[in-house]
Each structure stands twice: as C-alpha cells, then as structure tokens.
Image (tube, rainbow, N blue to C red; front, side, top):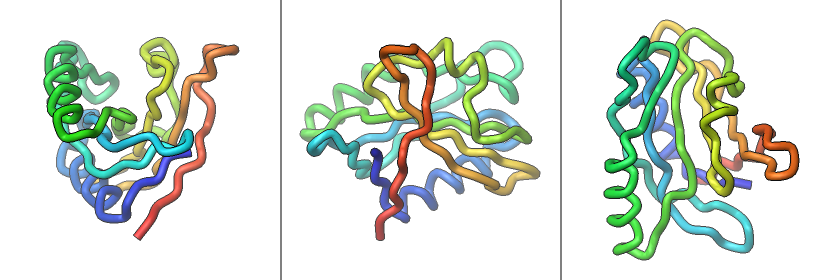
Length: 140
C-alpha cells in the first residue's frame, strides 16, 4: 500500500497537466512504515528520453542518485516513481513492465487534453516479475 497526501496528488496532477502532451515523470519521496510507503513529497524530473517523449520517459540515473542522496540526508528515501500516460489509460505499458524494479511503487497518471483522467499505483511482483495493482490511499 502507498499513502499519498491530497496536496501531493494535486501537485502531481498539476505537473503532468503542465507537461502534456509529453510524458511527465518524477520521484516520490517519503518513508516506509510497517510495509506501507508513506509519501511526504515529490520531485519532478526532466524526461531524458531521446525519442518520442509522448510515449516514453527516462529518468537520468545521476539525477535519481542525486535526489536519493538528498532524501537520505533528510531521513527519507525514494519510495516510488510517477509518470503520465498522455491520451492512454493509467495501466502499465510493456515498456513500463520492462523498466520496473522491485521495492518501488509506480504511480501512473492518465492525462487527456491536459486533464487528469485516472491515477493508479503498481508494484513489481518478484515472483511473476509483472506489475500488479497496488492500493493507494489519499490522505488529508
């Protein structure tokens, strides 16, 4: 399960809407508490994919490590990745399945004409190596 404050959901929605029609991406920062990922904030990241950015995203590994280090200095950690699916459903693509790693939650945000349609959360099942839906609780 992942818990995300309403203000962070609103910020994610604003970020992906602003960057439409490209895929927006970023990291979810927080902590782990009894197996629940608690998001405290997000860090938007430039989509570094060199091809069609409306269909793929790439987070620069050095940018990921920099944000991970900054979070650790504040007693936090990267608990997830978010990205948008412009004009597509909030379900993992085959590319998303190939890029997924264990431990992280993947929040996918469907955007159509710059408006958020749906938000879903996914995790990599380490037995089947497939992304499966994860429960997401939005808190006040």
